[in-house]
Image: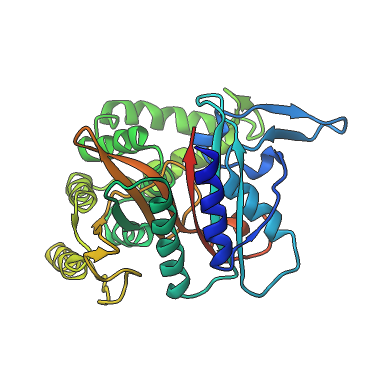
Length: 338
């Protein structure tokens, strides 16, 4: 990023009330949960054996630092610096976030500032795509599939390749062989006579038996897997103008007999155009970092007839609690350039 663009962005955010904070260069690895981050860390241990890594993502670093403060009123912050991952070059990142946020006006403000930032670095036409992970979760919870499969799908939606592998297995039952199940059942009854604390392939017999009991007896796969997989795929293909989204989603839910209601003001942006940006709902709008819990959005521009994402954001109300930190509702966005 050219230094003059960098300073323009910071100055624009400061004028909107966002205050600069300095981020630590390292993070305790215990706070990094997402697979897409974990496998690309630069890690080391301190003299007490505590594992640290160079920060792989500045948004996560910002949340951890703020959650450890005793600030409970609304705070608007901005940060900048480099993030480090083994699969990428060193990347410059600028972020802007609102902490202790609890209303849709903050969502709109973050999106509005995202558009301002985009305009500071390019004159190209921007495309704003909005999604919401709560909608996907609601669809998933309404379907007649085992809870362990719902959990696997929800946990791996960030990893698109593996997510669709799971969906394929649910749809085709290709990993479900009745003859093998019968063999496993015989082994199950034999293992019940063994010491439950004995370790086999890294797991105790007690854990193996509990897993098998859940898979076959308490939470078996249903014959509706194929139908459910098709509904999930159809939902993730929904893409339309933001103005039409509430009606199109309502029709989809009614068609599949899903007890989900969506209000006309559900999304923070209601118009198809905002500051000359095209705005659309995209059900498959999911960043590759496991941070967000509900609203997600991105801004892209066209390059060689393809949309190139340059900016991502969303709401991450549950992240701090999941990391063992104090609850802190937040919404934010960041732009990353090599």
